[in-house]
Length: 129
Image (cartoon, rainbow, N blue to C red; front, top):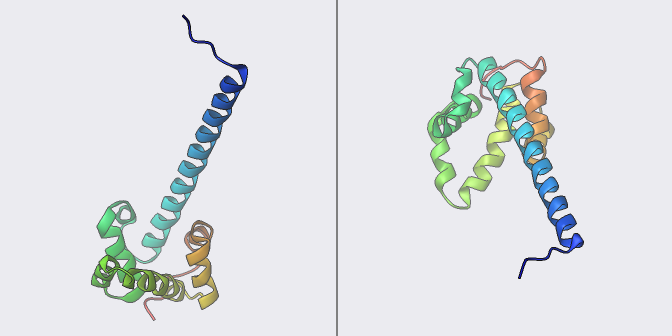
């Protein structure tokens, strides 16, 4: 006996596949845009742009840019502390580029948009505060 397909099942599968492909493409575009912006941020801060691509080294460099000490990234491995440290990191990163606390909060909640603004705008790195 052959397998019979209901037209509703076929349509549901097609919609699901299309949705997943669209979602995947959007996620890849967002990831690429974020990487481009992070590359620009690293270059503005005097670090090599490729450093944003290396998993632990990128965090070390980001903490070095924002805090002045890259080794503080080890605090992100401590449960519960990592949440607070990452909030402080984004606020300090905003201040390291001459932006205010509001911009840091934007980095926390709308990361990709504010990283793009920070990386592609004329914001200059002034150093850890």
